[in-house]
Length: 352
Image 1 (cartoon, rainbow, N blue to C red):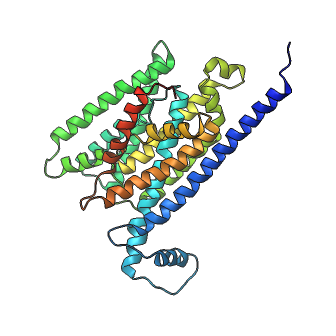
Image 2: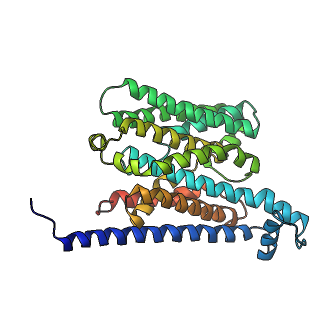
Image 3: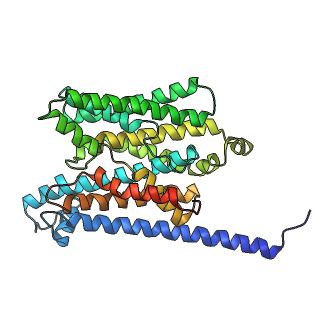
């Protein structure tokens, strides 16, 4: 067997090292960018807050300092602006990482977090809860439960069907999602036009308005656990993209890993949607942008998607609450960004 020349081997290692350094630099840049966006977002709003006042209010949580802000400013800062920013960061991060994980697991670059019907199931659960007159918290709980039920139903159906397993899962997700979408349409038909219909429609458009610390505390453990699992399995998702046969030769149980990834991504998606409503395109667009920047290595793609998703959704939410006097639902703005990008993806000649 001919030996690989040492010069070529050295060149290959040098190229890989340069690529890794470039990816790490981009991830670090994304992290710095998120910090800057958060700092700016804390100051923006209908009632601007001075940077020194914002720093003082945050510092006062750790140690007492002289108050240079009013009680109204403190209430606005801690009860309205800060929870909304935290929720935007969490939801953007989690929808992006769920989308990236699904795309690797299903070996399909056009898969999004709602491919298994979690979003439509959550929408149906929320619509039923709104028709029943439940509180906001119970609407979120109902949406979360129905999202999980939908995915479980999809997995149960796909386990009994014959043929290509991954294709069957996707088709089952489309069919079950359509059923729940029909259920949402019926709920809108029978809803009270003066009250319930408006609530259902607004929920379906997605929004971070009314974010509360209670909601964040409710979903944070689920989001944290799901993100930790996906982050820990990021190199195994790399192997899943090669196919089950390759995974088996490398000693990886592809079926078990795929199930774990689907469960973690589903819980993350369900927890996000149950609080914010339906926010589309984030889980499809952001992973592709990250691939363009750092490549398809999931060891780098997962953290990059987390950071870029968090920053992206926070910027979009800033636009939603500042662009007009009447706040624009964030789901509308993400669709304005996502749909043109999707068209670009399917029409570009160069393969991603």
